[in-house]
Length: 321
Image (cartoon, rainbow, N blue to C red):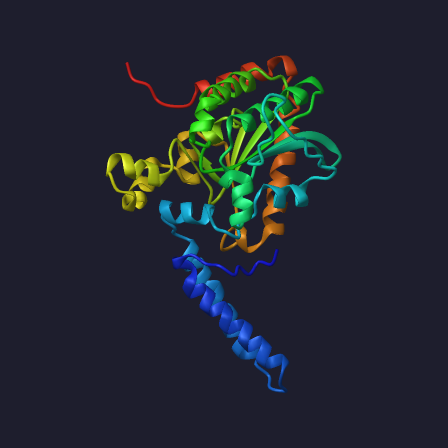
């Protein structure tokens, strides 16, 4: 996808206007014999300055908005650019397939891995098919089936997280979505193979945690990871979703705060202006990080993997007597 996004957030509009001016000037230059080189360079410098000003000091709420940007790369976009020989597998062998969660074996630089990935849609039709990225219980049971397969065949597991949360509908409750997530937490804690989780957009509540009990938890710079969405928190605490920016600040859900709290292990930088501006550069950053983590985790003996993972999660949080 082109780095030029066709949709923008409110705080991106000044930058979008400058980019439109640049496009118009380049077009005028190509359609005439006039030389606009100096003008083009001046606008390019102004774009670079504006970009630094706009994105250098984003609030937690603005980062949440970026994590939901409609042009942000989704799981299949990264899978296509990072992995080879991806073979999607379907169904939980109990009820049905869940299109909000995809997965299957693939290779990264020739190394076989198992991919678990949450997936949203870019338009109404895709969102209905993908259930707006909110997995049902069968999605988590499909993920567990694939992870057990990975453990059996000694394949590292890579989990790409991008969900506002598990689906909270009546059907999901009737089919025990909380139990499905809980079983995943228990089973993932005990696998002998390396597990890497990467939050690429939204990391909402148990919907994200259900595939994120990992040896390494990485997060893209403008993604978030939280026990509840800012809107949900605002509706509970302030009785008004309009307080979502306040909730985002209080929840400490952005990447920098998560790193300070020890919830994530590493922040992956995004291209200037966000991941939605350059999918290829984002994918290159993610691939390099995944390969480095896989190499590091390969040093841990399979028999020690679950204990290593257990100790990682035990160290989270602060307690007082």
